[in-house]
Length: 437
Image (tube, rainbow, N blue to C red):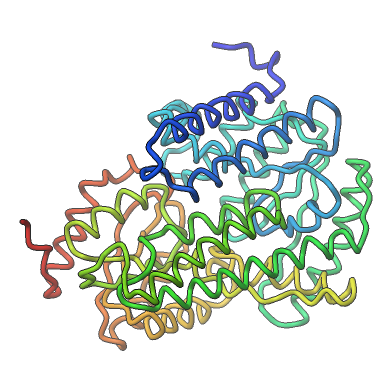
């Protein structure tokens, strides 16, 4: 066992970078027709981000820890390198036979706690990140997040690291967004004080305008996903676009170009009337974040049931263009994006009407045949929300299956059990399996 006191955290980031370099070399070795340009581009952006983290730490440049939804556009515009404490770890689980998840099993936290919360605390206690100059905490959408940051604050590794916590509003009115926007000004001062980075409205504005372009592209792709057959596979759009907009550096023009390329593929497929599941029989909606094991599930749904998960709460968030004409309007728009539009935060805090309205709209817009709800073990609030979703689906005559899973650890409910539950549900509701050749 390594002496934790001797670790700086950058060791793990270098491990991530080197592994991704190996993945890219593997992709290069494949025949041209087997290469996935989107997959290659995302991995390259992740590797570049790891290199920037290493450079920032080793050369004492501004470095922060934060979460998705914390208005990263501001950090990016200020030239701050930042990271999410679970993004890299969760991506690499599939490349390492769940090595960190297995180590986390030995960690002194209740295994019934949200997997994401456990990963985050485990990663900081074991110094799997470069020590940041400061971090911005997330006080939403669940109590687990509050506990997580209390654990961070007590961590020996983070001892003395300044913390800023945005106090999220509970409602979705202009007054709520104004309340949060005022805090964003405070956050800017906090970042300047603790990193040495300087705020420049024009630079942040440029980043926000680039993200406006990205969210507009995402909206276009969502429109194309209404076609039948769906032009893209289950979960892919939400997985890729959310990583590019909320986890990797905000406002990167390369990400915009990649999203535009995906949009063009979706558009071309719609125009040709083709998609990954040509004999599409079942259109599904997933009202939650996408699971880490979504690719496995999506492939099975296509092969066994001619089914496609056409969208999810992760893929369907209603990002509104941010008005960048003034600093006040920009911060207001970012505050709205932060507390009312980012998935899980949008549905997990505030009024249940949001869940009801989002699910109703999705069923209507995407011609949904059935709804699959993850029943994530860490989202205790969803035990109540589920009753409202049942009513929506009953009123709209669309069957609902509530599973019990971990979105972030496929071992919690084995994938074969999930498949069996879905098969029984679909059969009971009159759907037929794909005829085997």
